[in-house]
Structure formats: structure tokens, C-alpha cells
Image (cartoon, rainbow, N blue to C red; front, side, top):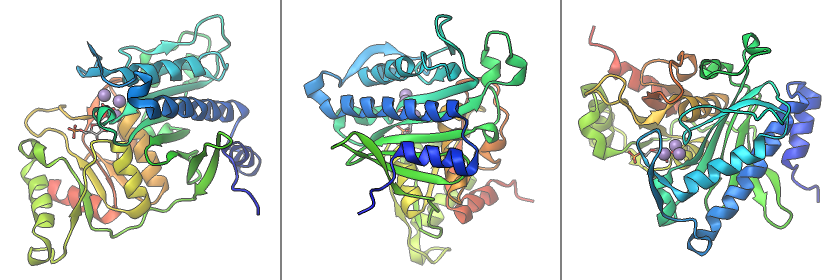
Length: 337
Ligand code: AHG
Ligand code: MN
Ligand code: MN
Ligand code: MN
């Protein structure tokens, strides 16, 4: 029986067929994938591994850090800083960028990551993930130290994006700009084996994901969009909808990639710039994956990948998934003509 291709074989074939994969980028993806295996192993130990609970300190986001937020962040830094493929790294858990120490060679890529997405779910045994985004250092950075500004590129410039999901299976979902591919960790040999792809997310699944407890933050348009769907077949749309909200964007996005639907975390209408999700290492990588799988991703009105970032940890509203549903949100957001 022909075995499912491993991540390594997939990457080598992408390099050969598509010629889109310089050796350094292949090394970067394999290194991140290996670090995610280690993170998944630490998470699976749970209380037995003394990795649950909080550290009692806040991160730059003003969130209380979980032990695993920091463990995963360190694992990603340690795995990636010596390989010679990166110019610098950035993380949800670090206030400023992480430069490659002078004792190591430097490469041309910038790696951004959310080491643990869905941290609030760690201590209660629900799926969490790691999200990553790869950019190229800008040409003007040649010969000088990388700065935070070098990271502030629109999402459309990403050369790769992906996530690991630590759930019933340990999964890696990846795009290099030529489709979305899913790998499942084969624990017997420790290899990532391709289990789906190129993925096209189903359209038309009437299932939305939103945190209903944030109702007070919505514009009247978003409220109407949600209420029309809650009204079901007796309501104005004449259709029944289902709702799911996991508290881990990785799990919600994975469900949407596999069975369709729409995810909304709108910006807080009460205060300009106030929003939950981060552009550089949550919205941008997820938007690239969703668009590569045939969906759409906006901040409720504007395409996420077109947004020009202004700061490393800036937050943004996010609506992604089913094309018709994302368009319907943009319509309700339009000021009444
Ligand atoms: P993180 O754990 O990396 O801080 O991100 C959590 C995010 C995202 O994963 C999820 O969709 C959202 O926060 C959940 O927000 P609420 O807790 O407000 O529902
Ligand atoms: Mn997150
Ligand atoms: Mn996180
Ligand atoms: Mn967090």
C-alpha cells in the first residue's frame, strides 16, 4: 500500500514542481513543524507534566500568561534561532521582535507566531493550537539590523502560513500559496503524514461562530446579521442556522475549512481600534489559509490581506469563511445609502 506522503516529501515535491520553495523556506517549515510536535507532546502530558495553569504574570497583551504560552514560545525560539533561515521572529508573547543572536547565521525570512492560540482552553482539556506566518525580510533591511517596521507588511506578502491543532489528533495545516494541505502526526514514527489537500472549504454551510456574550460590542448591522440567523426558518432568511464557538480560533477555523461556515470576531463598536484578535499572527495567517481554500476574510468590510499594519500587536475585527456570509456581513456594515 503506498504510504501517505510525509511533510518532507510534500515540501521537496513543492520545491521541485512549483519551484516556489527555496531550501531555506523548506528548512523553516520543517523546523516549525518539529517544534509543534514538541509543543503537542508537552500539552498532552497536561497535569502529569506540570504544564497547566498560569504564571501569574501578564504579557504585552495584558493577558495573564499560561505556563504553556511561555513554554511554547521558548520552544519555537530555541528551534528556529540557530538554523540560519531567519532574520528575526515575533510572537504574541513577546513585546518586541527577537533578533537572531550574532553567533548564528541569518536568513531572509521573518517568522511570526501565536505560540498557543486558545490559551483559556488549556486547563480544561479543549483543543488549542499554534499559528504561524512567514514573511520575507524587505530588501532595504539588507546589511542592517532588522526592525519592527520590517515586519509591518500587508498579509498579501506572506510566503507561507499555517497552524498546528492539538486536539483529538495533532494536525498541521499549511499553505505555501499553492493550496492548503493538512498533515496528521503519525505518532508511531513521529512523521507528519498528508491527510487532506488541496483543501477547498465547503460553501453554503449555515453555521456561524461568534461569542454571543460580546453583543454589547456589536454595531447594529452585526446584531441584525446575527439575529436574522438566530431567527431560523421562521425568520427573514427562511433558513435554519447552527452556532458553534470554541474559544480557540484554530479549532473554529479548522472546522470551517473542513465543513464550511463563518467565524466572526467583530471589532468593538464602542471604541475605535479596540478588538480581540491580532492582525500579524492571527488574522493574516488565517486569512491566507481561508482564501487559499476558496473562502474570504475581512475586518467586516476590508480584505484582511490588504490591510497595511501599523504596529506589531495591533488588533483587528475578523470575519472569515463562507464567501456569501462574509459578503453579507460587509453589506450590513455598509452605511445605509
Ligand atoms: P489567544 O489564546 O492566543 O490569546 O487567542 C484567543 C483568541 C482566539 O483563539 C479565540 O477565538 C478568541 O480569543 C476567544 O475570545 P473570547 O475568549 O473573547 O471568546
Ligand atoms: Mn490566539
Ligand atoms: Mn496565544
Ligand atoms: Mn493570548
